[in-house]
Image (cartoon, rainbow, N blue to C red; front, top):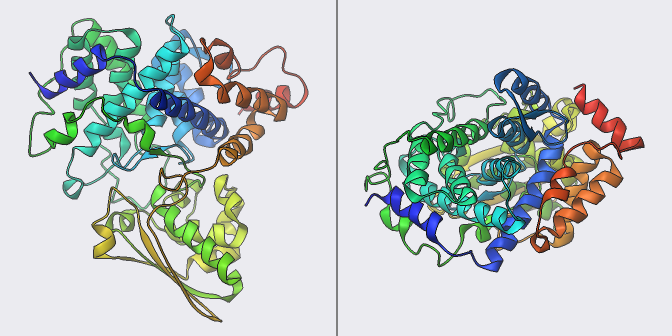
Length: 457
C-alpha cells in the first residue's frame, strides 16, 4: 500500500476529530475571513476577481464580498488570493507555510454546492490541515530551494474535499497525487528581489487541487507512489501517529502584514522600545541575528511596493517601530515613502546565527541588539505573538477581525459577520454565515457604499 493511499484511507474512514480540533478549525475560518475581507480591496484581489470572470464559466458559487458567481474552483481561487494577498493568513510551524489560505476557501466554496452541516465543514478543514502539514513537514527543509506553500497545500485541499464529499480512498488518493504532482514550481522564490502578487502560489494550487478532485472522480489517475521516496519524505513524519494529535491545533495566527519570519524581530524591537523608553530618533542600529532562511527574503530597506515590503524584515521592523504595530497590520502604500521609516530601515542589519538556524522550522527565533544613544538593549525571542506557546487573546483576534473587515463591510455588517463566525462551532448550518460574505439587499448606508466601491474596483 502506498503512503498516499494510507493517508487517503485515514481521511475517508476516520471518526470525527476531537472537539478541540474542530474548535481550532472554527477559529481558522473566523480569522481567515477577516484577512480575506482586507485582501479583497487590494489591487491583486480586485484583479483576481475581474480575471476570474474570463477564466471560469458562470456557476452557483459566490465570490466573497461580491455578487460574482462562478465555479467552485474559480471562487476558491479568488478567495484564496484575497486570503493570501496581505500575508496575514494563519500558518503552521512544522509546515513552514500557510494551509488555511488554501483549505478554507476551497472547502467553503465546495460547501455551497453540496448539502453539508457545519460540523462536516469543520471536519473537512481539520483533515485538510492534517494532510497538508504532514506532507510539508515530512520533507528535509535543508534540501529545499523554497518552502512556498503552493508546493504542498494541494494535498490538503484534495484531502479536505475528499472528506467533505465522502469520497472513496482510491479517489482521494489519486486526487492528492494529481494535485501533488502538478503543484506550483515557484521558480523565482529565493532569487527574485521583485515584490509580486503570485506570492507563494497558494491560489493556483487551490484551484488545481479542486480540478484534481473532479478528475479523480472521473477515473483520472495520478502517481500515487510519489510520497513513498524515503530520501525525500520522512515516512514516520508522514504517517506516524495519525489521529492522535491534530496539526490544526498548533497553527499560529498573525497580527502583522509581513512574512512570519519578520514577526519575531518586530515583537522584540517593540518590546525593547517599551521596556527602555527608546524613541526611534535615538536608535543608532538594529542588529538582527536569526535563522538562515530569513536572509533569503527580499529584505529591501526601501521596497517599491507593498508586496515587496511584506518580505522585508528591515522595513517591517522599522514601520512598526516608527508608526506602531497597527501600521503593520494594514499598511498604507504611503509608508513606502515615509522618510522616518526608510531611515530606520537602513539602520537594520541581518545575520545568520548557526544556533538559531538549527531551530528552523520548528521555531523562528531571533536575537536583537538595539544600539541607541543611551546604550545597548538586547533580547532573544523564540516565539512571536500568535504561536501556540505565545497565543493571542480572544480580544486580540476579535480586534484584528474588525480592523480588517470594517473598511470592506462597514461597521454593522462586519459586526454581524464577526458574531456569526464567533459562534460557528455551535451552529448546525453555515448558510446564514455564508450569506453574510456577500452583499445583501438589506445592506444600506455604509455597507452598501463600500460594497459598491468594491464592485467597481
